[in-house]
Every structure is written in C-alpha cells, then in structure tokens.
Length: 146
Ligand code: DHK
Image (cartoon, rainbow, N blue to C red; front, top):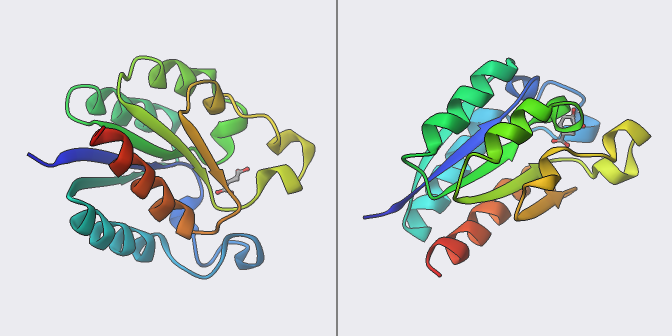
C-alpha cells in the first residue's frame, strides 16, 4: 500500500500567487497541490493536502495524521515563529516531518529566523520557492521507503 503523506499549509498561504508575489511567487496553492499530486503519483505516495488560517485546525490535522500518515510536509506560515502548540502536536507524530518555507526566512526579518517547528523537523527547506514542496516530497519518498 502507498505511504500516505500530509501536506499542511498555514495562515495566508491560501493567498499564494496574489500575496507579495515578489517574495512568494506567482503560483497559487491550487497549482502547488496539482504539482505535488502529480509528483506523488510518480513517487508512489498517497497525498493529502490541507490549508488553514487557524492554529487549532492545523493541530487537528496533525493529530489526524498520527494514525494514517507516514510523513508530514508543513509550512506553518507565521505560526512557525510563534507556535509552541504546533510544535507540541508535531511531537505527538511518529512519522517523518519536513518543514518547508517558500522564501529564505534567514534572509528576511530577524523574527523569522527562529522556528519552533525546526525543533521537531527531520529536514528544513527554505528559499526554493514553491518547488520546495516537491523537494520535500522527494525526501519523504526516500525516507519512507527506507
Ligand atoms: C510563509 C509565511 O507566511 C511567513 O509567515 C513565514 C513562510 C515564511 C514561507 O516562506 O513560506 O515567515
């Protein structure tokens, strides 16, 4: 059976393509979902895609993944830098976690340099644009097949 992967996007990422395209690019979140779904099929992964502007929704999605998913790709948006609750939720998940940021957060404001999620992530991707999600999937494919 194909390993299931959950991609989670946090606040404001529903506006991808319209929001600060100089930083986040012109691709929409639907474009990202389509690209990732096609790649997942090639990699033999079963993909689920979720976005929420609410911390609790993201936490519920991580909890749901506990029993069903082998890996999570998460871009928590601004919650990356503030949310101990999302870190705690990820710490209840026993599969692989890749943290993914579209922009290079280390080249930006100082408050974006710290990530709570990095304390749990098995790998971190930043600054590869929306291509980062595909890189994350490729890494998870390697990890879940041992
Ligand atoms: C997305 C956001 O919404 C920001 O709050 C983060 C991240 C960076 C990204 O690069 O994908 O600071």
